[in-house]
Amino acid sequence: MAAIGLRYLAYAPLTEDPVAGTFEYGAGKVGRKMINANISLNISDSPLYADDNVAERAKEFIDGTIAIGQDELTDAMRTDFLGNTVADEIVGEATVKKVTSSDTDTPPMLGVAFIQTKIIDNVRKYRVILLAKTQFGEPNETGETKGQNIAWQTPTISGTIMRRVDGAWKEEITADSLATAVAWIKGKFNMT
Image (cartoon, helix red, strand yellow):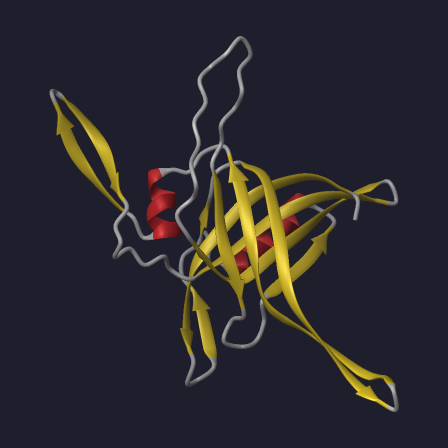
């Protein structure tokens, strides 16, 4: 894969009906600017031995993790990804937004998608990766004092990748234009 870029983080709440085997994405949103996305998968590898050899081999998706680096993790995204609460609080004469993380927060199930820019045979293409069902957790945080040179400190949020009720865990397309790639995400995540 000759990827040269990453952009357009989008996400939507996922509702599943295990009895009917159906799912639906709610109204999707666009996240902040992406820095990186790291996907790591757990794949079951189960060989069947017969006649002193491997006769069959089954490889199946178990789950995975995704870490998304962005330029900012907004208050709205903390609510959408983590189930945190946001409320106005008065400090002197100023009003500020207070984000509260609680032990009773329940991060929702989300569909998450993003676009990789690629060059294939000297032609720019746009690969969309849509992770069908994810659940994120509170991010680790670090801080660093400013020295002679600026060291950017950006948030990374990590989540678990799971199978959706229909068995799918990932969908992807490669489009000839960025507009087509964005339109595909908008259609999947009910975005206007």
